[in-house]
Length: 167
Image 1 (cartoon, one colour):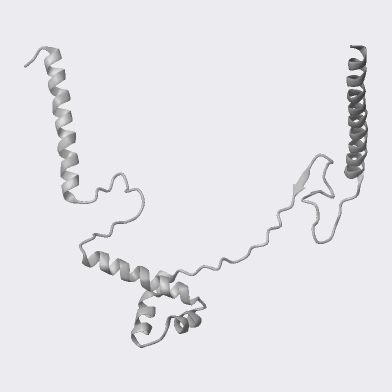
Image 2 (tube, rainbow, N blue to C red):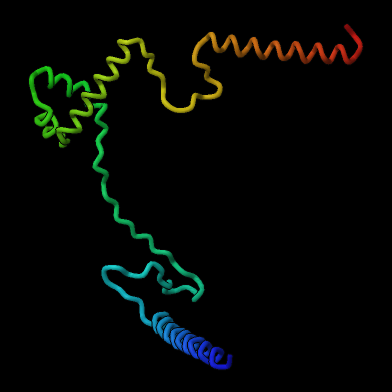
């Protein structure tokens, strides 16, 4: 039994020594890191102390590099693209003149043709997204909503009069 306890105490002692040494090493590392002067150059530190300010005030540098998106509103070009396709130009030629790829022009033509075929088959295009609250779609919906509202008011008034004893 004693041998078992001794054999299990030694690894625990070794582990605690390793953890203590690691803690000391990390403490020295972070102490040196915090006391080191700020690096300047390509990537300066995000925070710098103001020159003429108390030590507690910090200034946050916001240096952002903006990269333009590679995106063009192609839907606005659809009329011109169809006019040029009717004249006999290829998708590649049209795309090169606008700085677009052949696939982008092909996708535009496909989307526009799909919209035309849906409309010719009886589909009514509606605006995307959630409809506005005070703006009903058509007159029939407006009348139905008003009718429901008036029926609710009549029912409420009838309940009030019956509770008051007049009928």
